[in-house]
Length: 67
Image (cartoon, rainbow, N blue to C red; front, side, top):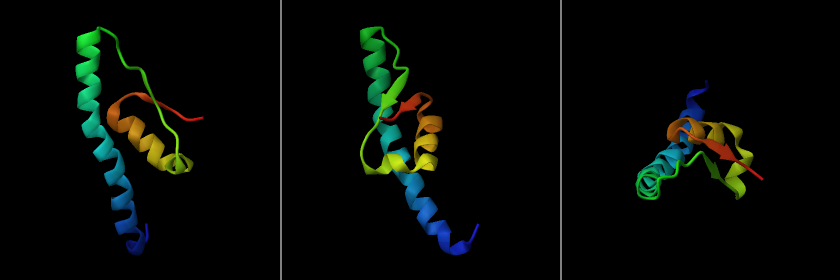
């Protein structure tokens, strides 16, 4: 990978980590409700980036569903 693209990749990877912090809320909801969260539905401009969506899915451990 080109060194010039490294900062962009690092920034792109920060987005799912930010969202992964919200997954602690998912865990709490799952525990309280007794239901398991099996997928995350996403929309918006960033869904066109397949790498980002796959990285998000891998990070939070659930399937990411796109429209």
